[in-house]
Length: 450
Image 1: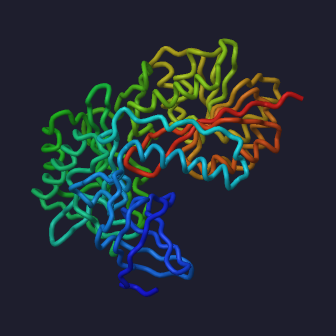
Image 2 (image 1 turned 90 degrees about the horizontal axis):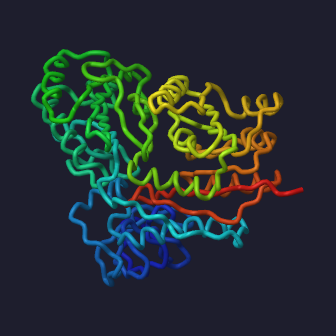
Image 3 (image 1 turned 135 degrees about the horizontal axis):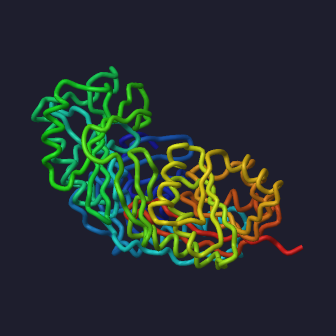
């Protein structure tokens, strides 16, 4: 097999990255945007030892599950790499990801529920972070082509709230008008690196964050005056990021005008969100995710709950009305401050948040005789550390409610909990990110009776 070779392939499966899988003379070929059941004429793009990557040159036999999309850029950039597949099939694909991981781990007896669909299939994201670069001599916003840093200019991001798209384009035009230079990552020069826009579904208010190479730039007063005129924009923040790095946000924020925080809601609980705070992206699906976790946990009024990886308190404050007490642990000091302020905002008096590492704090609580009935965990994609798993088991809760954004690390961690005497019999997938391969999942582990 050689680069640029044209071959006919039958697509038999989807990879976890949602690429079509085919086999040709002993090689596995991954084909962008192809769907199982299709026959494609494909051009080989890259050849490795046992596998290759290809793109469709011609669709010989088309799947009935294919969706005709006008903007192929969504798929090319990975921004919405499932946009060409019908939504019910996306939900099946996500469930199958979990099923296949359990099979590999020899956990075939674990039940996998149907994927909980999102109320919105597009336009669901309440936040956008889009790169700003110069393309053909003009400042553009868009998204990087997959596996590259080539910017594909976009004005419609499909998965983002259309109101956010409107503001992104308006800010782009203001930056162009005042000739603000886009960031040049090769030479680490220019000015605006990213546009970060957040919108509250509850109030409609929007926060604009300019991620910049410098603390100030000469056109900022005029830019700020014009951004202030954009309907529904209630604040402008300059985030200072001087480093040559792929990390989007720097560590220092300057409020240019308006409110320092945005107020949003999950169910009936309000949250004030700082520029760098983590807040669930899909505002309408998040309460459904948490309701599922609460229902599966079968919470009791006398339960004492620990909210590990608590962030600004989204899970703990949602759970608080169902239980006796909530104690949250978070390593980011500002998030802890936000969580305690959010408890006051909602007049929730049985929830308290502390700064630190859960694996260090939980054993101390256990030594002091503090009762812990249930631990909620919602870790980042890398999952839980071995130290955390050990500390959680030592705390001896009746149940551990695991909300995962990465089924691979979820299955890995569940196996470790099994070794420490916890059992589980079901995983429920939840679609928080329609049009993408990402899937969340909820599992409740129970302490095995001795």
